[in-house]
Image 1 (cartoon, rainbow, N blue to C red):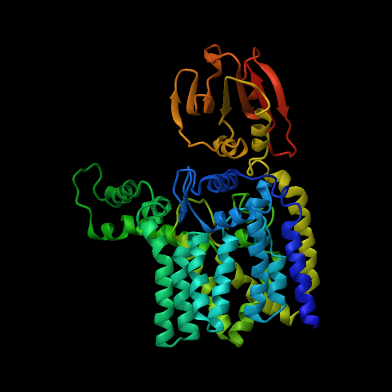
Image 2: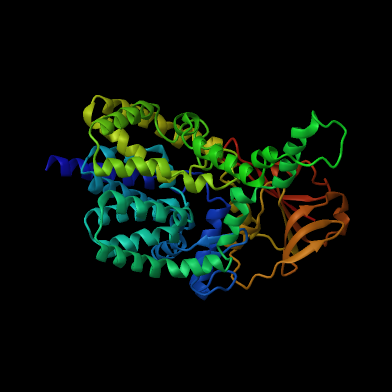
Amino acid sequence: MAKNLMLLIIFIFAFTIRLWQIDQIPPSLFSDEADIAYQVKVFKATGADYFGNQFPIHFHSFADWRTAAQIYSSIIVSYFTQNDTYIVRLPSVIYSTISIYLLYLITGSIYAPFLLAISPWSIHYGRTGFEVSGMLMCLLLAIYFFKNKRYYLFSFFLCLSPYFYSTAKLFVPILLVLLIIIYKIDKRNLILLLTICFLMLLPMGIDTLKGNAGFRFSYISVFSLPHREQITDTLRYQDILLSHPNQTGVKTPIYSQILHNKIQISVSKFIENYFSSFSTKFLFLTGDDNIRHGFGNHGLLYIIDFFSIFIGLFIYKNKPTKLGNLFFWILLLAPIPFALTRDSIGPHSTRLILMLPSLIYFSSLALKKYKILIPIYLLLFFSFWHYYTIHYPQDSASAWHYNMANSIIESKKYNYTQIYFSDKYEPFLPFFLNYQPYLKPINLIDTNNNYFTGKNLDNRYYFGNINWSEINSFPQKSIFVVPELENVQVPSSLKLLKIIPKKYEMSQNFYIYEK
C-alpha cells in the first residue's frame, strides 16, 4: 500500500511539474512548434498537410518531412482546447508522464520512476513539442509487453515509435535483436512479431524510399559529409609532399589510399560522434550546446548521477540480470543513430534521449542501495527547478523565438496595402502562417528587386530582406515589422506605429512601422 501511495505521489508530481506554466516555460513556441500548430489547423480544415497530402505518413513542411504521430496527437488535443501551446506541448506532457509509470512496471522499483520524474532531460522534453517523448513511451511499452510475452502489443508499440521520431527507424531493429537474444523467443512467436512489424513499418518504409522522409537523413548522414573528396586529396598530397617536393603526377601510394579515403573520413566522424555521446560535459555539466535542446548552465542529468551510474554499473556487474543486460546494451547502442549524423557541432540531446532510461536504471540501482542519496537528489532537483523556471527563460528566449508570434498578432490590427516582415532575426513565415492564420493554398512567389529580396504571398505579405536605402520604391501604406537588431537601419521618414516590448533579457523588441 505504501509503495502504491508513493508511486501515485511521484506520478502526480511528475505530471504537475511538466504541465505547470507550460505556456511560459519554455518562453514561446519556436518555429518548428509553430509549424506543428499550423499543420493542425490546416489538417482540421482540409484533411491534409499544407502541401495537400491527404492523411500523410510524413507531414510535408517547408524545411522537412515530419513524422506524423506527434502531429496527429496534437490534432486530437485541438478538439479540447484552442490554445496553440497546449495543442503542441500537451502530448509530450502526457507521454513523458506515462513513461514514468512504465519504467516502474518494467523495473518493479520505485526508485527508477522517481529519478525519471525529476530528471532534467525528461522534464524538458516533457514540456516541449519535440517528438521524442512519444517515441520513448512507445519503446518502453514495447519492452514491457515483450517481457510479459504479449507479442501483438509489443510489435504494435515497437513499430509505432518511428512514426513519432525518425531516430527510432534506426533503433527499432537494434532493440528487437537485443530483446530476442536476451529474453529468447520461440520460432512461432518470432515469425508472428516479425510479420506484424513488417506490415506496420511497410507504409513508412515505402514513404521513406520514395524520398519523402529519406531526404533529410541522406543530407545529414556522415556518409554525405561535404568536401570529403577535397579532404582526401589534401591528406594524400601531404603524404607525398616531403618525398616528392614540387613534383606533379606522382602516383598515390597504396598505404595512402588505405589510410585516407571517403569511408575513413565518415568512420572517423561516426567514432567521434559516438564517444562524444558519453561526454561528462554534455551529460552532467552544460547539456546540449543548442540551448533549445539543453540548458546552457546545467547538465541533462545531475552531478550526483555521475557517481550513481558507476555505482549502479558495479552493482549490475556483480549481480547481472536480464533486465540489467538489456539496459546495459541499450546504453551502449543507443548513440548509434546520432553517431550516423553530421549536422550538429556536439552531442544532440534529442537524438540521444534513447540513452536516458538506461542511465536512470543504473542510477536507481545505486539509489536503492544507498537511500541517503534521496535528499541529495531532491536538493539538486530544487536547484535545477529554480534555474529552469527563473533563469532558463531569460537565457533561452532568443532560441525559442520569443516575440515573433506577438509581432504577427499585433500587425493584424493595422490596415495596409502590403506588409513586409524582416527575416534579419529569424524567418517570419512559420509564425505568420499559424498566427494569421493563413488557410488558403500556399503559393509563395520569389521576389527579387532592388528594394526587397525574399518571398511573397498574394502580392501582399512579404518575407525576406529589406533594402532600406530604397524606401521610396515601396508602395504607400506599406507596413514593416522589424526586429531590434535591424531597427537602427530604419529610415526616420517612417512612422512608428507600435513597439512590441521584450519580456526576457535575451529576446528582442520588435517594431511596426508605416510608410
